Amino acid sequence: MMQIEIGRRKIGLNFLAEGIAEVMIWAPFACKVMLIADHLPVPLDMEQLERGYWYMRTDQMKVGDSYAFEILKAGGHGKDGVSRLVRNDPAALYFRDGLGGRGTAFDPGAFEWSDRNWKGIPRKDYIVYELHVGTFSPGGDFKGIQTKLDYLVSLGITAVEIMPVAQFPGERNWGYDGVYPFAVQNSYGGPEDLQRLVDACHTRGLAVILDVVYNHMGPECNYFGDFGPYFTDKYLTPWGKAINFDDAGCDGVRNYFIENALMWFRDFHIDALRLDAVHAIKDFSAVHILIAIRSYTEQLAVKTGRQYQLFAELDLNDNRYINPVQVNGYGMDGQWVDEFHHALRVAAGQPKEGYYSDFNGVEHLAKSYAHAYVYDGQYSPHRDKTFGAPAAGNPGEQFTVFSQNHDQIGNRMLGERSSRLVSGEMLKLLAGAVFCSPFIPLIFMGEEYGEEHPFMFFISHSDPGLIEAVRKGRKAEFAAFHQSREAPDPQDEKTFISSRLDWAAVTGLKQQQLLNYYRALIVLRKTHPVLSSLDRIQLKATALPEQNCLVLKRWNDSVQVMALMNFSDSGQVFRLSPRHDWETLVDSSAEVWGGYGHTVNQVSADGSISVKAESLLILAAKHV
Image 1: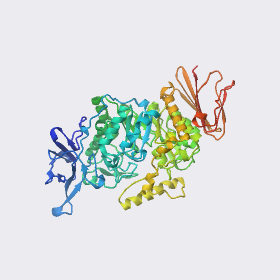
Image 2: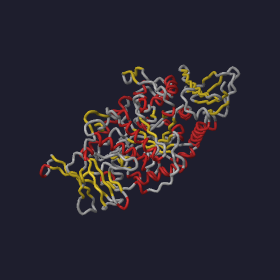
Image 3: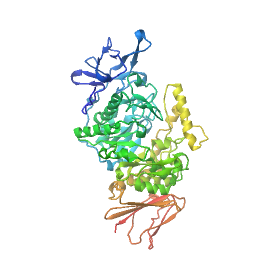
Image 4: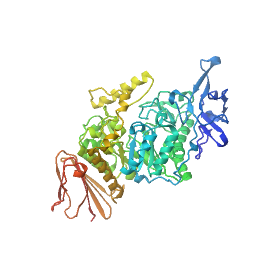
């Protein structure tokens, strides 16, 4: 059986010293495996090892060579009852010609890194900017991102989150239909360009988060089932068969995904992984696959001296996922919190349709500020069940919050961003609500200047049946939102092109005002002793439902901060303690941010203060 080595990748095709290639493949369904390549005069036989592994060393492969495997399987319809299949390497790192071609031999160890002194940044200091490679820049690739890194630094970002880059069919996809988890999308520039991007990020002090998908694999060009039991019939996910983490033959599958996580950290210097929809990972093993990934990640961190983070996307409100393994948790470092978003959007006027129907606005937003989860043991009408458990003892730095992200925009039929749904004043209030929280803030690309182009769901499959199935699936998805119009065709290239950022718009006056507002919020978040502390204890959130307002109070031993949020369409009066000498830190309605005017709000002698419609006022005073 293959033993995982922390210091190097074992599966797939890897280059050793002196031009030797080592090849290891897990194919328990095969009775014979051969390495094939156009430049090889004959296929090269591989040696059969225990537990379904096949192995060889050869000096006949070099970087850039195309290769695949010829697999012989007993019980087929071919000659002598044996079927012969040509299949790509499940652990290939690169497909130069896309999934229509063969794998491309690549050596990740050949890259010369300049980030040797980089150790990562503390999780509490993450200010995350989520982006999609194909639509972020005009070039739609890693090089395009690199040209914008100085812009992100000037904005105040500390961590860039990249949506999945695992090889998918065609050139257009969100990335969650990736088929080869180890391969870096060729249309984005491939693996070496990703290494260059990460190196450039670290040079500028930016951490890199990479989205990975361990709950399913895309259907098109997926031939993993010809190698071994990668999938199980025991469970179903929303996207088809579950990956086999606990059924017969699962050891090779578990090793495969552990190796994948280690590769991103070790060979691509990624700082954090965001694991997509971990609630769809089905595993009743004694050691859950997330715990195993956590264990090996910790071993790698000891070896390299770097910090690595594991974030989970989770739809269960179950803090076992983010609790330490030592207290029977799964050991994830943190999670994305959709419920904060849902409550915030309902407070801002989002119609209570679909999953928004569970949220009542400012009251649930106040609860999320204090408890992260809104549903932590209450009956959920939308789910028709009692849902969640308290996140007691989990610090604020374990939760990431946002006013919009790729899912919440793309889950809308037309992919409208907040800039198309609410006023400019409300945009500033939404941003302030996120940055005043005791959680990690996340911005979705273009949000900071009010990008108006949509972000819609798009694909570039080649299978007509699959294309039609996706179209029907999108239509069914919007049934819960009572949409009467037709969803844009995800296969149409126009859907993809219309989702690109409009960088030319950034120079506009209102865009610059909003951009400067975001910069000011981020500076305040980084420098203020209260707001820079992700303390959930010294916090009180009070909802004022009749006014559609919320008061968020945070403090330390010497300073208190009061964030007054008016989600209503008219001015509202808040009452504060007149004993304090309040200083205005941010007034979102100020003229400098394109607001109503230059008048500065003042606390009256009786402690009352007026906050304009759809506005945020952040005040500070000594804590007594």
